[in-house]
Length: 394
Image 1 (spheres, rainbow, N blue to C red):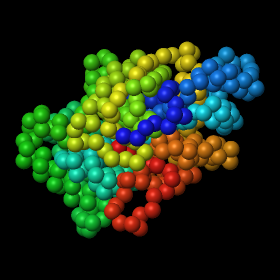
Image 2 (tube, rainbow, N blue to C red):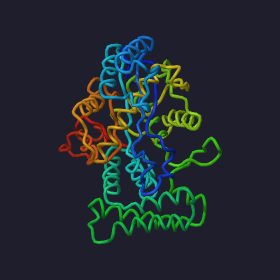
Image 3 (tube, rainbow, N blue to C red):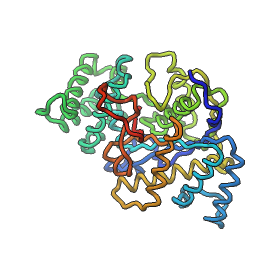
């Protein structure tokens, strides 16, 4: 374990943008209630009072009639976010973001559950993660909406019939005739192989059905929550902070925007991530460390009580809206592109800061960035040279 840089912050303020609940409630045509992008932002900063003074000055200059800057009120302009980033830099802080395309997240989840379940420690090795990423790319780019609809139906009503329909939808979308070493051919091969395993294990047994689906989390009303982007985004941000801090998490304070619906799920996710160090399921990444040896503190507070959370809200809101517009094919202005790229290139300063993109390579390009994976998530050959923008999914 490496010692944390003494300048790395010990306080991190979280807020999200683009929440539409779990991905089993996608809305018609996979529109995700018109929120196809989810962003979780963390502002790492010890001097919250200093940030408060600077944020108040930005508000006075840009929106003098507002009592608080909020992304939902249109305050997350490129100018505001640019000045906010200047303030965070001046105070010795940094920004971490998880930017997730929900359709791609569904595709990656299908690869890791329905089609190619991890069965051993080897499935968490870099080459295996790279291979799964290629399959997720293909599934995302080539599958019609009914493939995802069938998988979602199986999640919401697990059973032999719904799971077989999900397999059939994949097989219909990827017909025979494509070589198995091509991503489309590999998806068909693994769908057939997984379906065979499902039948052999006992397709009518509920415990078998659960093996081929993502694990649900109990929601605050007692109903199961399936594929919650907030959950995986939070877990990865927590592991990235662990990387930044060299494993020294005992002094870390995470202040998250108040979450009446998902607070207990996030607490449970944090605890589960901390327990991975004792298993063979630790994912090896260059920009995140899931080998927790110390535990940070997690609290929830309204944004009105924390200028750090307000800053995270503005950054998350800006990043979500930019990515949403870019992926919809709408033109983006030069100032917005410059600020989004600045957020992405925060990782140039220290491994762990910056933007992790969970979306297809084509969509990363549409956002104006160069696609890559985490430097460790690649094939074994030396020809693969990693770029600087991370789009690792885990």
